[in-house]
Length: 239
Ligand SMILES: Nc1ncnc2c1ncn2[C@@H]1O[C@H](COP(=O)(O)OP(=O)(O)OP(=O)(O)O)[C@@H](O)[C@H]1O
Ligand SMILES: [Mg+2]
Image (cartoon, rainbow, N blue to C red; front, side, top):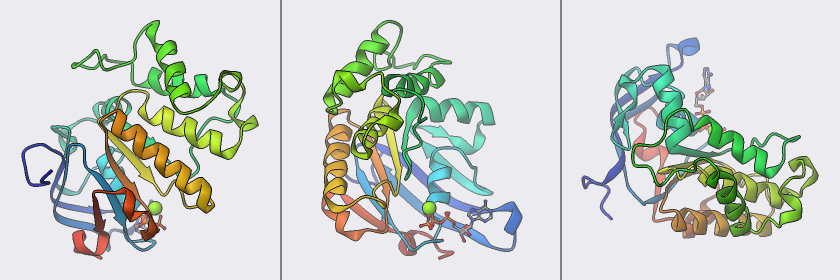
């Protein structure tokens, strides 16, 4: 799939970003960056090269000082904070390094919380969102798909293994049928077998749910899982 075609899910043009607390230093200067719908991209770069900052622009947590960030046809820099919060809850699945599950909630409740935040407005192209009484059935189907057995569905996630928590984090990221999954170094603290496991499940789940994936890592050995590898030094002119 060509990243230059009109089916781009992500289009960045002339994007500049500076943290207000360090206004002398432009962290990001991206003349142009596109990701096609359905593409899986590994984004690599040294610590401090701006990877997480770029992910924050894609999810609308931050807005650029100048330039445009268009994700799924929405120009994020033109939206209000509230519109961007809603956009993020509805359209983006996020997998963090520490998974960010709420430890005292069960798998089902962690996922239900994410679907609750996405629920303020129903997706226009609905039929693809989890709603009403179907919601908990869909959550349970998703947990089964990711090999979480029924006896673990309602237990606090702090009582589950790291591998089980990873799979719940993946389930949560895809639960709202997002168009985009963003993963910020989710494998950096895993040993090799857990890492391979995590990657296989994440890639299979992204493919089943036809989701575009932007995955940040230092670990170039992950490259075999991806359609494309982008380096911050190539796309970021401030680097
Ligand atoms: N809130 C902030 N205020 C000021 N500067 C920041 C802030 N967050 C990050 N930075 C700076 O912006 C630069 C990019 O940080 P960022 O977190 O995007 O890097 P990264 O590539 O994700 O690094 P890592 O691989 O270590 O996670 C760094 O120099 C960092 O010190
Ligand atoms: Mg980072």
